[in-house]
Image (cartoon, rainbow, N blue to C red; front, side, top):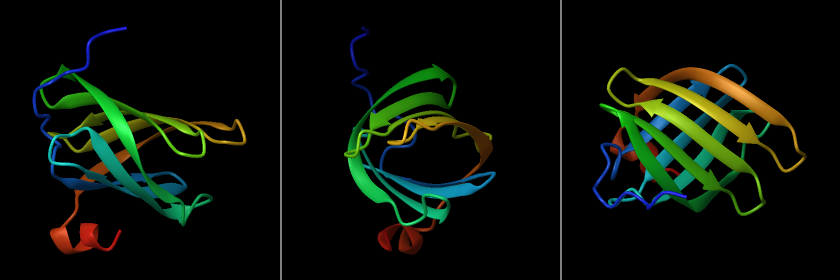
Length: 116
């Protein structure tokens, strides 16, 4: 297992919306990039929200692998390109359903992020 990154990631202190086929979510990152608050705003899991510790690794300029485990046991891995605005996500739900998703990544306005 690698040592966690200690620098500040590009997404730290910012909020984003990801739109996948059948699911959209808001992801709000802490100032140090170590915590994510999330809310699923549309799709089968709409209404789910929470906060989790996350780990990340920059894989190329502005592209990050970010992972976390939600309180209910669901696991999430994102490969997010914060420069070109694209996201790939791999999500294992509590019911053991496994999802592979991709779609646009858009920065949220501050007031939109505060609603979560």
